[in-house]
Amino acid sequence: MPLQNRVTPTGDIIATAHRGLFTGNRGIIHDPATKTLLKKRWSSPAWITCVCEFRGWRRKVMGGRSWTELFFLDEATAFAAGHRPCFFCRRDDANRFRAAWEKGNAVADVRAREMDAVLHGERLERGKKRLHPLPLPAAQLPDGAMLQQGEASFLIVRGRALQWSMSGYQKIEAALDEAMLLTPPSTLRALGAGYRPVLHPSARG
Image (cartoon, rainbow, N blue to C red; front, side, top):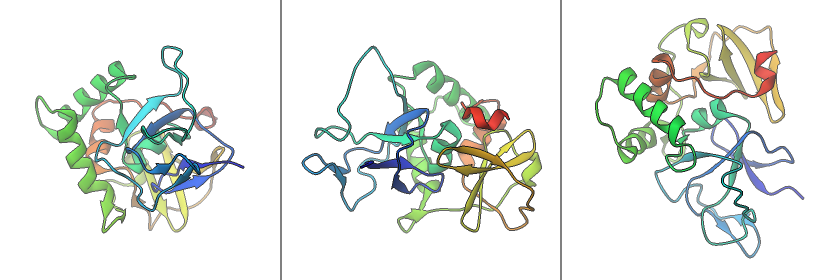
């Protein structure tokens, strides 16, 4: 029985056998006795994205009272949900992200907790995923941006939209006339400033 630990682009946490390319957390949000989620969906404003393998360490998923292991299809999905790279297991990526964040958002010497505070205001609205108006036509958004239209989420790659699914991306032929931005605006500006997220192989098709 799959655990409820897979994060969608809208930030929801669902149960599926698919794991994806990254793990991460939002603090402790599970009961280790039952390996089920608590009612809360975050316990810390630091929502991070981590590598699945680091220094040979092995963790029992939802097996203890440390952080709750969540999983993401790819980094674009994690960004859309409101996460950022971890400064511990992904220090190089996190520093590249911070540099692009500073450039894109016209700030200097930003700290992780300052990024977390901005992201927390951009990813949630009354406890639910916050959607934002598109600052540009969809085809002009940077690679890695994600949109929501109706019940479907879409990734922008080279000006084209790919529909997200638990197992990967699919080409579509649909107008995104009513799409809203899932990726937090500050993260979108970091993408526009040159940060290149790790995308699922299906996005390269």
